[in-house]
Length: 265
Image: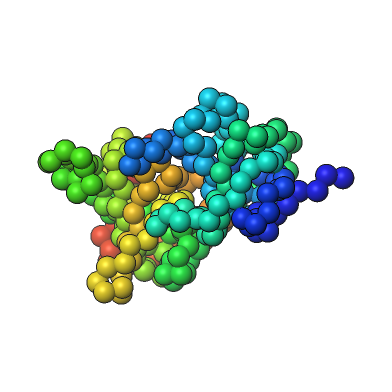
């Protein structure tokens, strides 16, 4: 029987690793002149690690990596994670080399590997959100981009709000392609609550650390409305039950729930 290493065991003072992982996310990143492909891998135990394919290895590996595929990866290097914004909770990162071997694997699990977290745990640095419905999506704005190369270059943003069953709120800001997603797929039409799953967003503390906002990360972040995941369906059923009991309706009215509905993403 083939032995695969666990992602939680990976460290930089050994090199003969071999892992069987699912590709959860893949995106192209161009940052400060560096052009890379970034990947989030997850093993059957739910542990995650980010991987990087440098531009000189793009043609060698890019077409062999697709989201939701299971892969067997070996002969890669492990380096410390030094990015100021960690997409996953891991102190290391996989870096592809010319000698890296990437083989196909049969699916090992049908798990979506989403770490649903309650609002209070966001302050501990988690990136996925559970037990929320989506309210108050504001119109798209075009504002000056403070990170732009050219003066007065603009970026797009959409502010929206998440609330849980207890009525607690978290403010969120979607930038550029994520703002476009809201602008293209969301408009007022009914009062049906929408369950949103955010993945790979980052936290920003405001008001002296007393308040938290979630901000989209270019390329990496995702948002899904009403996915047919077991946990989401269960939460939606509880939400409807609570709404029918009148409790959630009072919360929604107090919060000024926008009569918003989306079409399919």
